[in-house]
Amino acid sequence: MKIGIVGCAGRMGRMLAAQVQETEGCDLAGGSEAPGHPAIGADLGEIAGLGALGIAVVDDPGALFAAVDAVLDFTTPEATLAHAALAAETATVHVIGTTGLDDAAVAALRDHGRRATIVQAPNMSLAVNLLLRLTERVAAALDDDYDIEIAEVHHRHKVDAPSGTALALGRAAAKGRGVALEARAARGRDGITGPRRRGDIGFGVLRGGDIVGEHKVMFAADGERLELTHVATSRRIYARGAVRAALWAGQQSPGLYDMADVLGLGD
Image 1 (cartoon, helix red, strand yellow):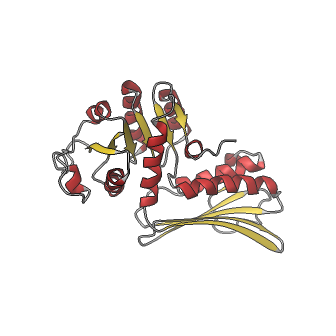
Image 2 (tube, one colour):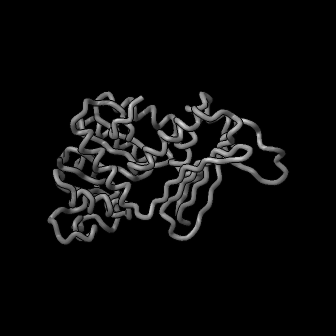
Image 3 (cartoon, one colour):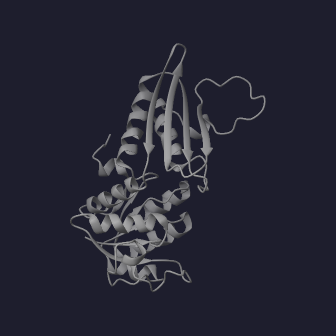
């Protein structure tokens, strides 16, 4: 599979390039950056620390989509939606690890999925996606006597809070409880808030240092608590999941999929 990367000069883009290059059955076939980026024209292999590959970074994502079988995208919501339109035009597999996509953006991706095979997930880690399913099942098994709290920790440079993964865990818990997350989420506590409301799904956020990512889902009742935890020590886990998703998607019909589909964790 010929795989390209948008945002290839960023930290995640470089990691994706290295993972593609190391994965059997994949060819690193191109990369793009925003017009004016200093990496334009540079060798993609040199940027990714792989040595010269004779592949120049381009500033035209349309040309990249037209030249490859799949594109990996960990950019921004606005850019990702533009890229999804290109995927639909070229019938290219589009694997999206971009965070911060709202409901309208996901609806747009579903529309583009009529003509392209798209895999979108707030977290591409294989283990995190197992955690999502476990969270849903535990929430379904334990009633409102068990308070649900979701805590996440990330590096100081992360711009969104709670993380996309924390919100996905909240949605999984809400699905297990048969409620809408928007109606039960407690995302800001400060001052005299009063007692915790029964049935709420709480969120806590910490930022600091170079922490890759930690997520914990706590089910706390009188006398006991159950904690489900995932700790990421390298961003390579996201790259590994994205490449696996691309290889899987190459065998699928057009549509909007997630990592549960990739892992065979259907309902």
